[in-house]
Image 1 (cartoon, rainbow, N blue to C red):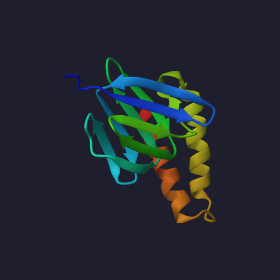
Image 2: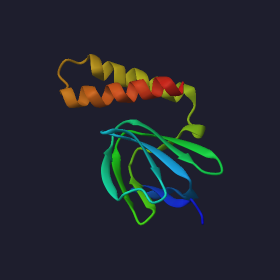
Image 3: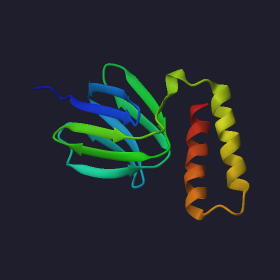
Length: 128
């Protein structure tokens, strides 16, 4: 019996990924969460971080936000910010980090914005 399940990452304008996989790790507000076949049904929100799709090959996507639903061995990830890490150059990441750090230094942003930006910076610095 196969240990695979379907993962699909969808943005508003296109399907980014749809394939059978063995395991997916997502960055949720509850912490990093591993999903495998026959996981309990769930709905959760993504925080900035890396989605790891582990199958025949490992694929990584940076996300800033989104919604995740797992049901009937199908993992659906809806996000407008998924970026395939294999296609992002380091200069682009440095620009994103610098912009986020400038926003963090602004005393007028909310605690929630500061929290999300700090996760974004922390995650991207690990990628570089």
